[in-house]
Amino acid sequence: MHPSRDIIGSKGKELLGKKIALGICGSVAAFKAPELARLLMRHGAEVRAVMTKSATEIISPNLMEWATGNEVIIELTGKIEHVETALWADVILVAPATANTIGKISQGIDDTTVTSLVSVALGLKKPVILVPAMHASMYEHPAVKENLAKIKKMGMVVVEPIVEEEKAKFPPIERIFWHVLCVLTKKDMDGLKVLVTAGPTVEPIDPIKFITNPSSGKMGIAFAKIAAARGAEVTLIYGPGTEPIPEDINVVQVRTTKEMKDAFDRALEEHPDIVVAAAAPLDFEVESPFERKLRHDQPVLLKLKPAPRILDDVKRKVPEAFVVGFKAEYFVSDEELENSGKRKLEEGGLDLVVANDVARPGAGFRADRNEVIIISKNMKSKMSASKEEIAWTVLNIALEELRKRKS
Image (cartoon, rainbow, N blue to C red; front, side):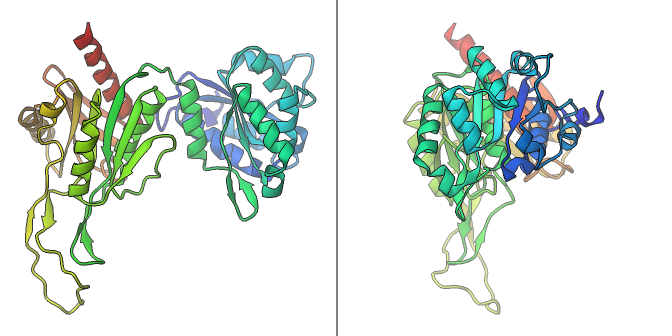
């Protein structure tokens, strides 16, 4: 086995078992292809690269073979590589897609490795995703716009570029991963409404300074993204975290705990099927914030008061919903963490609690992974995994429980 394949599944298992044919065209954005391929692999996918002749003049096929651990297709031979690869792949991802390739695909012209691959894939009813990247003047050309519209009408997905500095730039690779995930994920949550809270809250001391915590929002956004990819209608209430806001999800941005509580209560009126309270709202707020900026030499004694509790009365308001709460502790034993989670489960009348110790190395706030104990009335499970895997597992539990209730 090629050593580069060791990274498969290292960050998550969302794409485990999925096969992606990565078509690379002759845009300068081709230099992003190795990074994109390896991100997809880290989430479980197997990737094969298919390069046009122009692409090989920008990056070496040897680099893509290193990146993917698979032989790179740079020409079509008697092995009919375009047919074999299209049959093998679950999705064709053309990234970057040039104006030339977009035009040929829209007209069914097959004179390169990538356009031939796409033609076979379309005939096989395989999904195709294109990521345009070119100079902005080319992107705004009426014919290119017309070709992209035709491509979308044919059922292909177009990940829009970022237009700035007179360039239609390659979007962040995380955004491309998100579109691949949405295309390949089974829509087993179609028709369900999911409400998620994520990120920290802040409470002002004066017009400039505030108190907060280190929550990034990664855990809650993982829930929102995966629920949406699985077909759910998602509402995300997001405090000022550092994780990018996901596309195609209804996001309500808040700052204070009261704002989060008010937004949460309004969202409950839509009767969500699943509620995931993954945010880290502050337990206290400043009783009387100062109206003017405090000077550094001005002694201050802050009086705090309890902040609103986000999950208060949630089961009374939406008794039919499956409600997931989170319990964060600091430097405790597994037994103490489990007991703390059980108390939150019972006191809040929740369906499930995810408890974690944020003091543990490589887990908790801002980390990509977490070490948690998942607790319900009927089960307890310890899990050390990526936040995406944890979200996937918890949503599986919620979905199974909802099915039982309806049967």
